[in-house]
Image 1 (cartoon, rainbow, N blue to C red):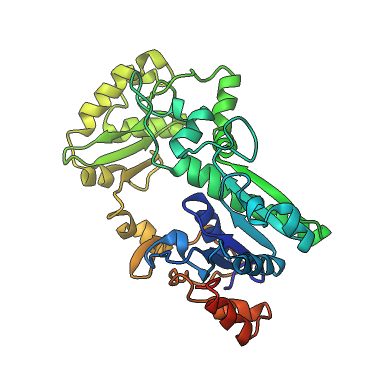
Image 2 (tube, one colour):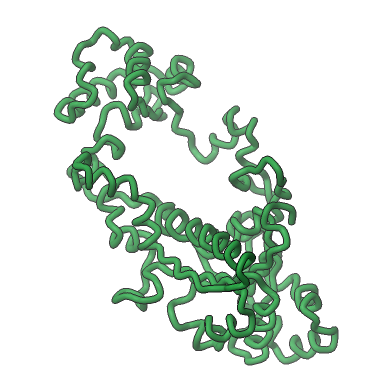
Length: 376
């Protein structure tokens, strides 16, 4: 694969959610990502999180399969695993073993709670991790219960993306020093970090510790989504004075002195009600004709069906077709290196012979592993 990570080999132990997202990021940017799958597993070619891999299926209950996985890790620059703390150690593939085999190895560990702490051995999901980090408390409408933001913040922003950054950083360190290391990536930690600006606002006395009453969480009239006459929605983010002035001009409210009180939280509720009534008088397309591509800080709220067809996304090729399905394109982009188009996820185990031959296994040894059930 072409890209800035070309020449880097990553072994990914199959999992769900943030681990595969990290693997996708690394593969999108040129790394060779070999995924160790479970026998009988399935990768859907339409799934972005599984694209760009090669696959070998190993029965990790078989000692020969564990030995094969260990050999694969000897050939790698990094690994990704997302098991509960202690699972890899019980398999005989913990950091002490693999770093002794390969001192430059970057050992990426993806968990919700982290490798230690009172919650470390408990099950959990995105909603739980962002609850403990304080993030979920601030998402929702005033006076209502918190609203889960799908699983974007814990699994992918605070988890998979954070691990991809950690892997890239540690790989740079290993290239300079020859020293590998373990990355303890916890979604509680990562989601807390994503809220860094919120913590800053709190420290400076610019934020109330409740949802739906602050400038960026839907409390302000100039930073929210609004329903239109056709039941579709638009988004407004007119924070700066010049952008707010343009919003007033485009909506015909420039002479309405009530809207002079932009930064008075006590007026946000009544002003929001007035904007809601106004925006409900026109369709989304009519408001787009008035405000789209201006400095109002405006955009239509697009559905998953609509977003790939919007002219801006079309021109930038923000979405691509992979495996017969529309997927987000790799991001970000580079001036000096060009990524190959993403490859659809392979069938589980489809690349076993080629992967094992590449690390020096001959045909007889591969056949013996297949006969013994280690490789499926």
